[in-house]
Image 1 (cartoon, rainbow, N blue to C red):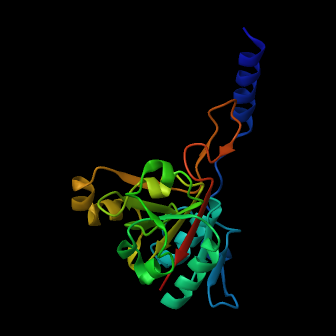
Image 2: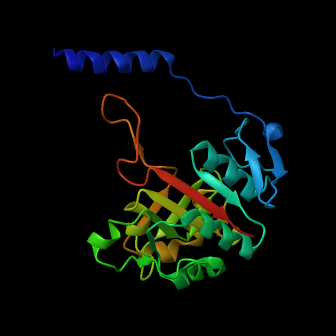
Image 3: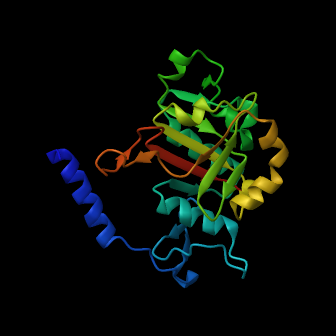
Length: 225
């Protein structure tokens, strides 16, 4: 047996011996505060793994789960604050976006000069950041669901090294099941439905975690009112 194969199998064996499933913690450690900009932030010290029957707010759960995945989340109180946040994030960058009328809160006015998903692929490949809306934000997993279609090109969320998703409160769903039920017709008629659950990551090579191999290595979400 080769030395490389032996080393890989040894690492797998060690991981199996030391692996554990995290305990399910109560949501009592969930802490909210208001920043100077009015955006709420959630401390992820305790992470409940299922939506609570007591009616845990979907936005709070989504923020908690998304940040646990390494997503940078900004919760903004007004449409103006959403646009200001997007303007700050993309300043000086080459932007690739969904069609501008597909973005909520008039965010298309902030990136009026962006490339669109219909642009030549070689031009899209030079973009620094992709900006999309979403068709669903799944609270229990912190995922964004993006259904491809006219004006909603899937390359926008997959090709640039950074993906920014603009999310409305109306886009929030408690679970994947709720999303599938609400969007079943749109999914059935679409060519593709992409779920973005944190930055792209893989550990296929020698169990070494690598970020940004199959998609953006950085993901941010702007959650509006």
